[in-house]
Image 1 (cartoon, rainbow, N blue to C red):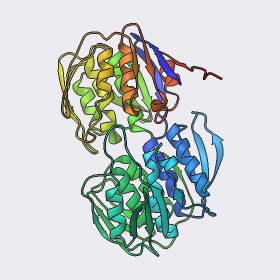
Image 2: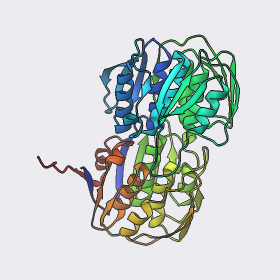
Image 3: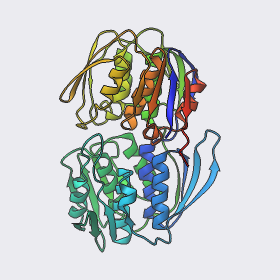
Image 4: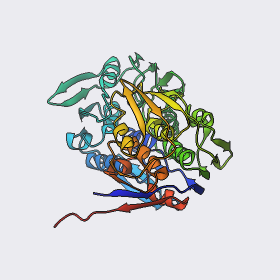
Length: 427
């Protein structure tokens, strides 16, 4: 099992390029199910989750060709779903990656049936799919839960007005993909506004869909009879960009984060500026400069354009070495403070009261062996390791590989002392 070994205390300088967004790539890969014609995608990141989604689609009958290994390490793919053989997503796939549920809407819309495993538990908290089921039922689908699977059938979905009980990104994406081939007009109220939803909508529009309002809380989809092929470039990963910005905020230095865009970052940039970090946006990206110890900031996570829950652990790591006390409130997932205990092992002073963490900044962290518990917790521990005195080892970085492409190489290129240690499995 791989782990990271980090020697902290080095400022970061240079430039780093952000890869394509995991949370945009996964639903867009599923969008290929909506047409028999090829969908060509650029800037597809090489991530564990993307690999899992590719395996699922191939198992279902989609042909996936790698057209190019791009210069920045990403891939250009062609997906063709003209001869589907298995209209199901088995438990073995869905249990390793909850985003597999995103095949439900496209399969039902195009083929009139789908069999998708219920996702099961998630380490960071509950992620129910009831809003997906409720919305598809409103569009005329017969929805049943049998033996741990969602079984969906519909001759053709019909347009409907859907009001979700909560803001759900994957729910919005699943319903939007289902609605593009439905008869009539579908309105999704209380829709997620995240940039990844907009990127999916842009891809669908290139395929011939008629969608209005993506990026607002009301999305209107006018159903069409069929979609065609298209070419689409995956948006840059705003969470990866935010992670590198936080790394510089904690470790100090000056780095150009290429492809980072302020309009996609939500409240992250505002909080970094409050912490005393200098941010300069240009056509190339965002240049971040941190010349002194950060100031403490208070924040609470919220749906976009609020502060993303996926940035909470990284900003907590910055807060751990800030001047003053930070109050951090997690409103999205109930178990997303699992990294707190590991940060304490590095010397952070953090107390948790329900959904609130009180972080008293310390002047110095000290290296130790810690364990990653989920994807974004891993990134927070890496940032803490970059500033800790001595050596930090982070176990279970397979979590990190789910959402960060070659992180150790990118950090090393801007001056961090990070190596990947691969332990040989006994024969």
